[in-house]
Length: 86
Image 1 (cartoon, rainbow, N blue to C red):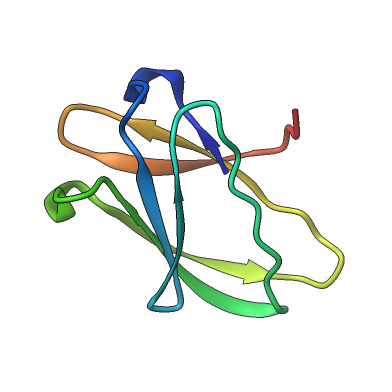
Image 2 (spheres, rainbow, N blue to C red):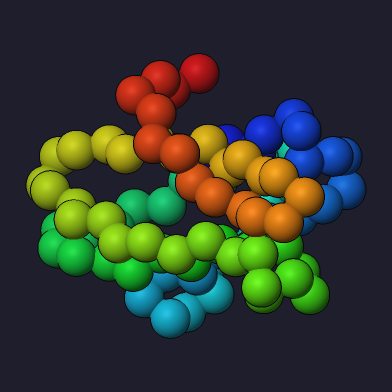
């Protein structure tokens, strides 16, 4: 996952995978994680702002790489799939 420049410099995004906090990252950082094949629940939010969080599911297939960019509006964090790995 990549952090959108629109989020600001010191605004971290926390990521949960299958109900367990998997980490957090801020602008200029890339979050990488290996997942076992199968369905995984993913949740992302800004600290203290649960109302504007994003959640979704990802069906992981063996040997595949999935990329997302974290985007943000004033009231919503969301993950957008992307095929680019920079």
